[in-house]
Length: 171
Length: 167
Image (cartoon, rainbow over all chains, first blue to last red):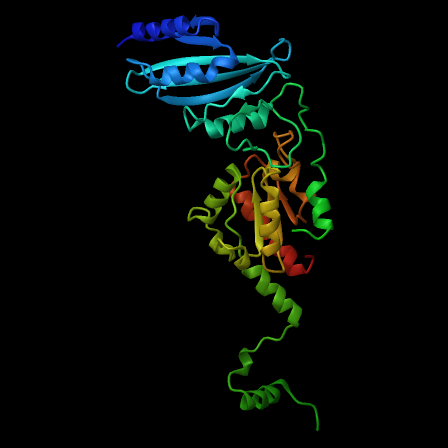
């Protein structure tokens, strides 16, 4: 059970989802597969149930913003196969105006809070998510702070917020 | 009745109340202020790394008990000193205001460290740039984090101000 098993898993994904796999990157022993958003859920379900390397653990979902690119957002899924001890990274690229990404909560329930975090901080929406609310920022927050065009001090609406509320008698 | 000497006065007084030569006379508000400053009750409320120093201040090495303020209360109803120990996130601020409102009067606030006093290195959207935007602060402690001696000094200076009736 070595890297060859991982390579064959990637090959099978490439065969099965030819139109969806846009790029396979090998860098210093890490394998990254860039896939099209439309088939993301199918690919993930395939990888989760794939033998002999079932990627049964979604260890992380993170977002990134590259404002110079046409498809500025990149969402990265880090998969781990507990039984085979293999890691695989999936990447999806999308523009701000693109339709929402398919949610992976139905594949790995742990995606729930990870996707909420990406939504909260980048404004990437997930289709089929059971409860897509902010998770880190206050619920009435304006904007998505990890976008590169977000001002460091925010939009300023917070500066006098609590003092005003207190002046109005709220605790 | 002629002039009463001190001895006679003492005899007369001690005859009425035995042991009354131990009495101390003072103005009531001075006694109250002395009582207040001598038993500050800090709230167990830690926000960040300054809270570690605050815990050290309360522990045996620095021994806040020497100044009558070692009992950190987990309930705001039983506390009258709020040490804002660390950076305050906007999301945390309603919680802190609620706790402050629940504390017993008269209550005092120490803004501990650079972050609580001014936002410190966290000059960004998520951190309150100085808790004095939200609360009346009686004492600011500089440092990142301040050493326990500095927090002790702040508490002693706060006690002096309470004793003088400034706050």
